[in-house]
Image 1 (tube, protein in one colour):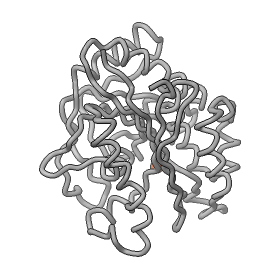
Image 2 (cartoon, rainbow, N blue to C red; image 1 turned 30 degrees about the vertical axis):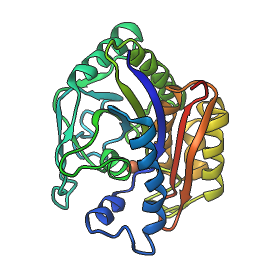
Image 3 (tube, rainbow, N blue to C red; image 1 turned 45 degrees about the vertical axis):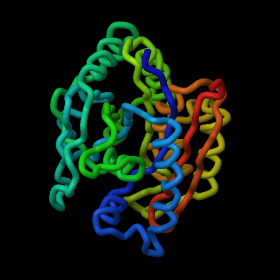
Image 4 (tube, rainbow, N blue to C red; image 1 turned 60 degrees about the horizontal axis):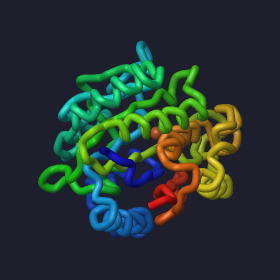
Length: 282
Ligand code: FE
């Protein structure tokens, strides 16, 4: 039987990918962020040993368009191309998929859980998915992990609610546990933390609220599920609404969890958070 081995909440910011590609891991502005992930990489490699990462992320109108923006879209391919976000295709190998697991998850979500997701047999992935990949896994010579991408609409209203994203995580857990093959799965929720990239509140951040979110996603996720999009945006900036994707990761874990790694860094225009959680009964 497949099992959830851990959950990870991690911010994605396009400039992290650029810093990674340009070898800026040791520069003063980037070192605190990249250093925070080194123990996470060792913990993944030595303790968690994941076979597959389910990455709950949003596409930033790169592979998906506002003409047709699915609420939840699940990749069902053995490979995902690297998308061009407007500054050339990054020097990364295509992301390795696991189509068999993807199809199982899609069937389970639709037939058993009443989540009528969009099934994507072809997807190109961008920084929403690739930044956490770069921070957690290795790609030389090829990615050391298979991925099931789950793309969430956090751009074009009406968005799914925080509670709905959490319920997707609960459904995903049941789907994973119904998969007969022996696989270790990590679920990664990405996006945010506090930031606003447009309008009068451009540059708005709220580090205190971000720290509260990191506390609360561990101890009281129901409090976060009760938040409206407006409340999230008011507290932490419009684009912080991306944090609803962390709740899918949290929904896939047991109610009580233990935190192994946690970090917060906010030197630029986005709060960059990291938290790793595991079921308490392990
Ligand atoms: Fe984003």
